[in-house]
Length: 337
Image (cartoon, rainbow, N blue to C red):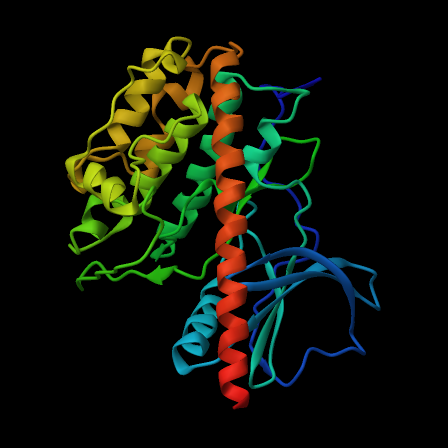
């Protein structure tokens, strides 16, 4: 049985390698420097990740291969690498190296072996408590706080992008900076991308975004972690985004019977329709729920519903991956004609 030790410090930890400033190198990833395994660590619409080892040190890493078939793909990858190169923080995945051979960009990344946060907490021997939820949410807020201190917006915060450092500890890291943007408060920034379930009202309405846009997503993640339910999920993306724009959610489900009023207040202060009314990262980190108010009560109902949520997500991800691979195959066939 795994129980998160609330007294276990989750402060600064040593990275598996010293922080590095990475420049995108021209050419293929060097086989003289790295052994690339045929073992896949992950696959999706973004590309494929393989286990990788640096020959001289034996350091295990992850190599993410991304096809860049157009200028926009290349710009997006170059921006992601440029942003990640400066994100030196224990709550954020670290970039180790990067290569561009003209058709594929390879990012060599810190290897994180604990799996997705939600996948971990639904394991049979894991005891999910409200106190455990605060430990995870606090770390997410610490990572986002660092991003915002560097004028970076993540813009794709969701459970799949929160990984556990190991299968035993309670530390997490934020990943996937493909949608991240530099933010200049003196300029208006608008976007039309993201996952419907986690996007803020200002994204749906194509209004100006800011730091508060990430904090909405933190609120949604917290709601799901506490209940196993998605606050704005509709039958379609359109229905979901309609619920988001109306800020339509509640705590009526029996999954919230075991959840403290302080936890609900924390979520409510993040899921505010007007961004200026939402907690900032510092406001969240100083909220009583994250400091000392959560009870170490086991969330039985939550875990059952969280399992259903994760299983549904796995199914959707598998279907989307198959569709993406078929499209890629069709495009390759057309290119060869």
